[in-house]
Length: 417
Image (cartoon, rainbow, N blue to C red; front, side, top):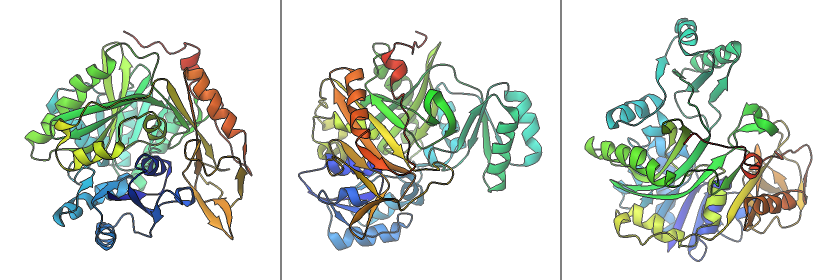
């Protein structure tokens, strides 16, 4: 099958790798994808540019990686041209593009989530802070690349973030704090049909022990040894399926990958957020354990035949990814530095997120530069293998967290059952 993947990060590299065996094209892609796919230029935020490229190549399937083209309506434009596409419509992608819309859908579907207040003016901030302290959850009600959320007990930090969001022209959402460890669950959704993938856990903070600012994600692992038995089924039945049915009832059926971020608290799972696409960096370890053909799953969703897809098969064991980030990430990442090390061209060990070539030399081109993969029979073995690979790589000023999955390995995550 001739397939076009849209995007340039580690998530897209994992998708391209998973689609090996097909004729894969990627736009714009990154240096690590050479050899796996043919790269093309594209304006990621322009549906017209994506449609034009898909026509030019003559693709049989388009897979949208990042959120920007989804919210811009790229899937609608492709479907209007009769081009099969994996990804929700612009209206359905509002589950990520507008947190207020997601709250409305959850309320109608009877799904448990945090209470919230939407604030549009700076004058309303103090009252919201009074209402939601002492643990503040402050969100940009729009796309923020995973970095638009502040969770803090520091009122001044919460206020500063709220003012910055409003100054940028977006509403800000104040939420009650949800107790319990977080779970990332990817679900293939085709109307009312839901097929879950393996549950994973992301590490959002920049530094060890969850210190520093929120990032797009510094590492992830799958599956979750601490998750109660039957937890995935419960999240599907209590959250994803009701939301999917509500979207169908509103005439905006969801057709793509729905990312559920949930907190597992005293009453079970509650929604922290929805994303309208594969999450990054959770996609990297999750897809590394998928034994079924990825193309079959994505094609089934795109063609509206997910209900006919055979049950997914998974490798035994665990997988983890460690993100190597550039100096200054996430506020002001430094780029253009040479990258050296072993296995940089092996997608089973290293997936590229922000790389390019300059005069034949591999260089950094983004904040999250590389995703190092490890697999093993145990979670400890998987993470040890990932760190062994990370130690072989040099990039001036770069850093990575040294505690990915540590709490799970040491049995320190105990969700309320």
